[in-house]
Image (cartoon, rainbow over all chains, first blue to last red; front, top):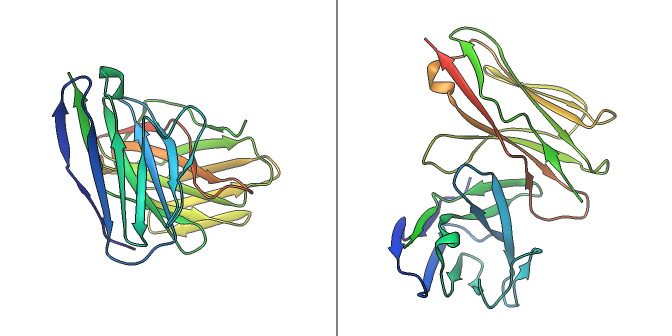
Length: 113
Length: 111
């Protein structure tokens, strides 16, 4: 499976600021996704990062709050904008390899104070 | 709305026992099904995938799929304390590209 890295691994941020999370994959992948996992909860899909075009957002998530870039087939960024304590979560990058299987990066643990 | 349902647990089993984890899904057209293991503080790790009705075995793990009943299960034989984790069921809906996850079942194996 692909090796996926994320930066930063964790951060503590102040309310009202923004944080950009990077996801790097060691091989080219067509499908990349961003998920959020709030404390004690399961994974919620934020968006599909499309290479060369705008991301596709799930219901409840908007581009102004979670802008995503996908400049090539190995890299994506997710920005969490104008943060509030409710944004405290683990943010996970995921890639699809082959037609079905998805793999996850190590995650970014974000705490907003 | 596409849904994946799991009992949240915790499911507690003694070491050496069989742990049985269950999952149901709402979209009858779903074609691929997965089990992930997530240790506390870590990201989900893919441990089993199943695409057709019946059983699929991999070491101590067996995944079972019944599409007519829209039911997926994971059996862990000879459970070990190291199996203590949250197990997430995930489904690929027919028109979707990303997996939909259940809330997970927490398994505790006592020695």
